Image (tube, rainbow, N blue to C red):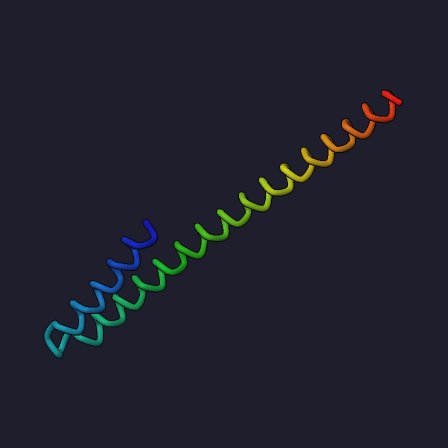
Length: 79
């Protein structure tokens, strides 16, 4: 989805550049707005993915600590 948004923004810029000279400033502004929206959407998706990755890493670390504590406790009881 990120690539398609970026491609749409670039296509809009290209079409604006190929259009009539009278419409060029308005089309360029519109294309720039679309590109900015696409960038914002991608940034939001990246932020969400980073948050999910951080949460998963913290959960994995907690699980590893719990497993190590259990193994240590079992080894202590075995002696």
